Image 1 (spheres, rainbow, N blue to C red):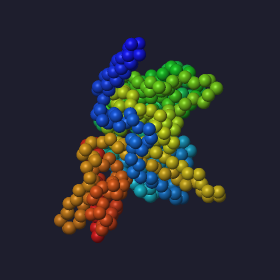
Image 2 (image 1 turned 120 degrees about the vertical axis):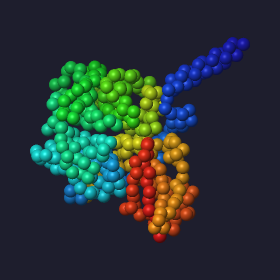
Image 3 (image 1 turned 30 degrees about the horizontal axis):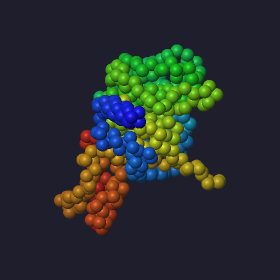
Image 4 (image 1 turned 135 degrees about the vertical axis):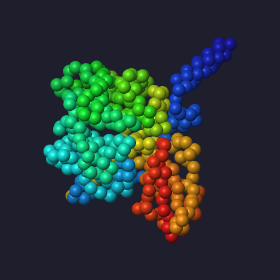
Length: 410
């Protein structure tokens, strides 16, 4: 009898736990099946599809020392900044070929001193945060200098833009002389005036007395802002006008560490359009949805995440040079989120233009996935007689993804 009571109690507790978990996910942008897929993951391949590994070309003008920031522009090119050592901004094609430098070092118009961060706005303009000179430099989509904004306050390191092209800057670094709580996010107008500040640095992070220049901010497609200090695991969700909506963290993680231990430096959060947030803890990632629901943690990922766009994350991988050989530039590894809409997972289809050229139509969030998608599709046997001409790629923007029309010629 006692055993039966124990079993009944266990069933009740289990039912209560499952119901409470269901309640927590009630507002999730993810479906039940998507949550189940993510929460049962044990390795990165359970969640993401590796679609490319791009070696960045090394030339006399494109040797990278460190990546302080990266973005993909409206042409699909990589904009890579090193504002910590070499102080250059480079442009690489989607397949890794070096194209040119963006701007140059100097004190004149369109020139910079410490180009730490980059961002792309909805008009395709490229914004470069020149930290020590206290300004944001704008280049057009063809990489020509347009204008610059002198920031009329303390210059923050990271620059972000939302869908309305409103400019935000983030600073989570705690300098040796910083002892007071400060707001980590500031909003600027077009004249460089700070019109709003919010997201005060957590007092517990302030006490750690350790400096790291991480970017702890991201903006989703609805212009909600997510912020997390690199030294303190707490994600805060804000409206575009700085109102706090909620705070959340991994319930399995404790921020406390012994004083003798090196502080854990967090990477992220990174936002994916499906409604997913990713936080990287050294060689592991944790996943939440944008409503703050904790989904899964402890997924191994040794490479560092450096960028996210659409439903794609980008990692950097440096390889040790062989003896007496020059250090190569890093590889950019691209992973696509596996859970996506049926519209994104439909196989390619074909049509013929007026000139008789076969067009392969693919809807994906990234151009670099094209060859992998072709290889995995059932239509591969139909494609085999043709040669993919990537130089004829044309990208057309659409909601949540991009249409890519690839000409296939005999």
